[in-house]
Amino acid sequence: MTTRAGSSVDAPRMSWRMPRVLMYHNFGEVPPAGDPEHLFVSVESFRAQLDLLRQRGWRALTLDEFTATLDGAPAPRKSYLITIDDGHESVLSIAAPILAEAGIPSVLFVPPGVLGGPIKWNPVYADEQLSGKSEIATLAGTGMEVGVHGYDHTRMFGMDSAELHRNVVHARDEVAAMMGGTPRSFAYPFGTHDRDARRALEDAGYTVSFAVAREHGRFAVDRIYVKGTDSLALFRFKLSLVYRFASRVGGRTPWLRHQVRTLIQLVKGDKEPNPGERAIPESR
Image (cartoon, rainbow, N blue to C red; front, side, top):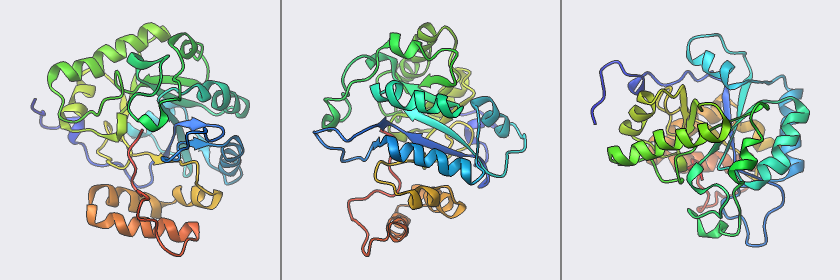
């Protein structure tokens, strides 16, 4: 698959001062099997993070407001978009009510081919269930918009045209049937993408797609991975321009990743960086 000259997939990278996009996965207490990827954000931490954003003057954006900034509209000096991946049961039971209570919009990305079943892409979380399609459908018309996360959470890298169609177009159509309206946003499973994946999303008519640190314009917007182990100080640091720079550069330059890890550990207050900590994690 070739890329047309001037395509959005090869657009200039996003401004450093673009709104922050926060990425969550699971909410509540850590399960008995453990949480090695630190996906579970406790209710207390989630509420504290939202309170910090409000107290420090950060403005929550709808997806419409966020995409308007991609089209050139001026962004508020401190603004953010909340995104959530996968569609775990805790999203509907914990996150959605908290966000609704606070009047904060968000976007949930789901892989329709595996909804209602267990996590299959990471055996550590095999006991965790995804919400069913009928449960996700109850979000229609609420402040939590639903987007696409591939068809069955397969990495979007090196796919042929048939695989891309299944994960981009067929997945979109299933979510549209489920929600009663065509989804317009996409998040790459594991944060992985290539030029063909970005092109497929543009050709399919999506408005925007999200990566993690592998930022590449409108169809690979970078996000901040909020981990269950993040202290409030570290969460605040992740909102900074320093972290944005370190995350983007570290995501593209392997030899800098160690420096990013060290920087994060210093903010945490640890004396030595944890060699197992990935400063630029991929979306789960």
